[in-house]
Length: 143
Image (cartoon, rainbow, N blue to C red; front, side, top):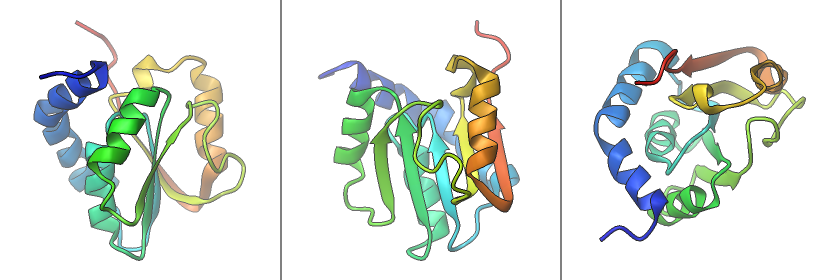
């Protein structure tokens, strides 16, 4: 039984979106053990959890989403993963802006929903470590 829109979102993201995201991570993102990653627009955290597994206990993943129900569900679902945390924030206001803290800023199927893309990209770049990587997969159109 579906409790909320976040539950429905989680169920739909467990299929094709998760598989496509994992392929994107394996072929283009290529995280390394110890990386610190921001997952911008993490939804209910399925790909955040996968990234946390790939960076190992030496690394860290922070999932950010503006929807409090999705963040709450992500925290409940993935609470056993020690190197993974979730924060309710937006692409305009997320942890680490201007602090050069992330090896990778990752966003899968979320950029097309974000407003003020110039500010979003500025924030992403300002939060990357020197030599860091910005990895974005998005839809250029919606059916």
